[in-house]
Image 1 (cartoon, rainbow, N blue to C red):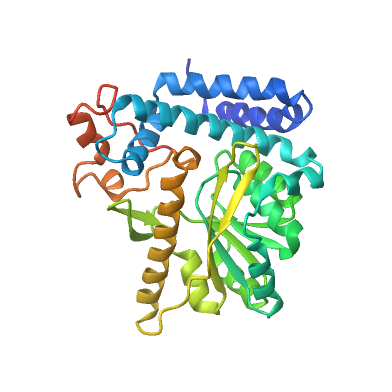
Image 2 (cartoon, rainbow, N blue to C red; image 1 turned 30 degrees about the horizontal axis):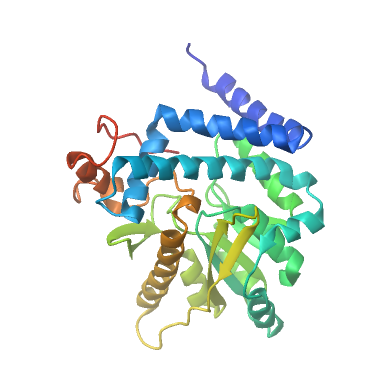
Length: 332
């Protein structure tokens, strides 16, 4: 059935609207079963986004991974991705004590961030798409980080984007569009020079551009913004990884501040600092592969097939991946 764009957009918007209106009001145990079922159905269909996910996981698990292990891992990732969405829909009605108690900072490293801000310096936290980064942002605010500014990809339809902005603003965040408005870099720099807190997911170049880093033995594209802001403003650059623990909490591992190199041009400093961010992410993802909720292409070999055959295609050629080997289109 052909759906004209305007109708399709309204359907998508209505779906998200129903999520925020209904999911937070129905019994949580019911919704957990529903979201898990939806994840399992998507996993069995092996659509384009699942293919991209499994191509990413080949890098994490190693090119010699067998198909059974890969499929088991991708299924768990999708279940945790479904959990993330369930929590997003329920966060607006979650009591603050449960929200704060649902995040665990094992080393009490938040104190380092609060101390840096108390000295007058801003802090830019670099995050991968792991765990529940929205809950983590709300937790940072509750722990004394004050206001939090972030950047969000402009989703389509526009009404869905506006719903997400309203949702995140309701958690206490200032949300800037990645495109289609005033360039966010200058505003972020102002916030950091004022000693504020900025949080940026950066393990995927959402606008198509980005900086190349070494990541799981390959070249990948990430957003250079966190390091560029730190170099420009003197703010502290702090990497963080997150994962869902067995006890249900979202665990934050806050790394040490990444220092600016003493020598080199500004682009060279940015590149070196982003490589340290990528290495920190890589270690966390290796330890918690189920929690890297990345269903989009990040590796240059997948983004630019002319560079060399993708790892997923190589694995398929070795009989290590299930499916028919047809590459999926870029996931939005």
